[in-house]
Length: 276
Image (cartoon, rainbow, N blue to C red):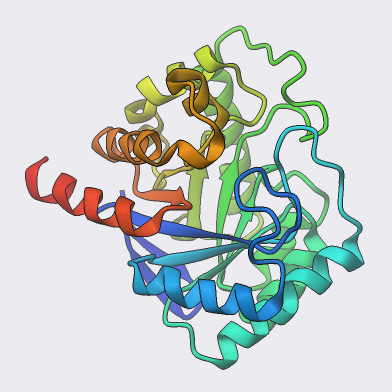
């Protein structure tokens, strides 16, 4: 497997596990909604995450927590594009990922200087694949059953590992067929997106199987509700559980860990790299 992910003008070396820092410029994200909604707050936090060791920054303008209402296109654009433009102008030294499933936001963000698209719908929207194929950006294909408004009502699978793997394979092949080279593709099983606690556990245990799909793996378990179910802790008290989940995921083969607590995770992954 090629672990040198091509992200427009950046090459992300995933030969050892790296951290993707989360920057939500939303008023209602499940963990940090509202904290970085203002432009200057968002910019300052972005540079702080890089200082803590984030190898890529994931910017989102629409919450995808369970039951989150959809955000109009113009509102999402107004949240993310000025932040991306400012970070590019100030020469943020790592790739910027845009967390969106809307092709219009993908195109605008990539034009503004983003280097990756992180799509919770797995590039299913019409024109989504072409929006990335027309550039040199990377893409993360994530699995989600349903939509945020409905995904946790009654998640059901005959075999969650096989079904998620089949979806990721299908969408990877669709991306390649339309011109996105495989060395620009990440895959994400989509922990917490239309999955029960047992589904999430099954996917975590099966992470090595996803390596057979030939693309680096992104895992996002940071502060997720499944960790709250395991520990009994509210979202703001899941640091230790989140770091543990990142370490276990890395030891099972994950290449990129999407997290809120960058410094703690980066330090934990240094130990994994040294001892594993």
